[in-house]
Amino acid sequence: MTRAIYPGSFDPVTFGHVDVIERALRLFDEVVVAAAPSEGKHPLFSIEERLELLRAALPGESRLKVKKLDGLLVDFVQAEKAGVVIRGLRAVSDFEFEFQMALMNRRLAPGVETIFLMPKEDYSYISSRIVKEVARLGGDVSGVVPAPVREALRRKLGGENP
Image (tube, rainbow, N blue to C red; front, top):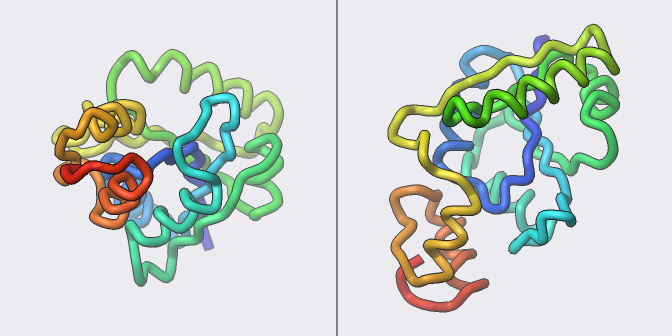
């Protein structure tokens, strides 16, 4: 079985993330979405909320596992007996950082490969940061996040549109 890890903060999960997960599921037998606590980013949602929202975004997908990521990514990858890390690229500006991370991961664990996947062009501009900002200001995010995320944003931030 080929297992891949898709790490991120997912605060919150967007349709761009969902698209990358769906693409990864076409390539691998199993995909583990690994949500990192990312306390330094001051997340809107707790890690437990993010894990639940990830599960709600792709209900019924038996080949998808959602887990909390603590520590080094390569240690998590090896503990999960995976050999591939999936990273989403929205724009060229994402590439430099992701490339550096991939090379560092390769140095730490030479057997772990990184594969970059691009979301559908309709989602290439979406980021969790932008979604949160639009939702905070009362904008409609229904076209960029799954319904459970939209509802969670409404509960967390108040307002009617998110």
